[in-house]
View (spheres, rainbow, N blue to C red):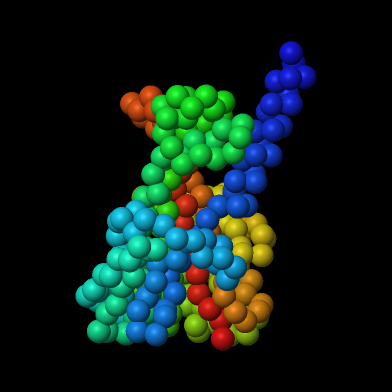
Length: 237
């Protein structure tokens, strides 16, 4: 029995690690005069999704102030435009209920999974946040009241060659010490006691930094926890 329990524990750890690596990314890209909220694997794959899952879109100009947007939902996702030049776009997406089972992750509630006979590892509600940087601006290095956010402490558009990008990870406005940040390369970096990490940006191209945090669900028998994931992406030319 002990061997069985140990084997199951190892399976769960490996399974959850794989889920971390394979997590969908969330970012914004500019397509001519329209901005697209993208879901998939950055620089590799775009996936269609229900645009109603994107519950918030905000953008900021170079002066640091929020700019008005015009949203255009399509069958394959959410898009928006603005008459003002955008320095940074901020997005929240509530993807909804997920269940990790011994047969993989299922996009359903715990009750639905039980009715279909799946062996459940855990159930959670997935929410993602994203910051996409397009040009230097006053809002880049300031918190914007996202529940989970990565705040650059220096602008990636102004860094001298060889200087690391310093970022701060916040949850509900509070620093998150000793927490892992991940890069698109698979590199893992830990924040210090003040929630700050230094990220080496050595190559040109698209860069992605992301982090995940989960909290136990309270007074909800259908959920084990809430999972929050946040992304920061930008391109170095």
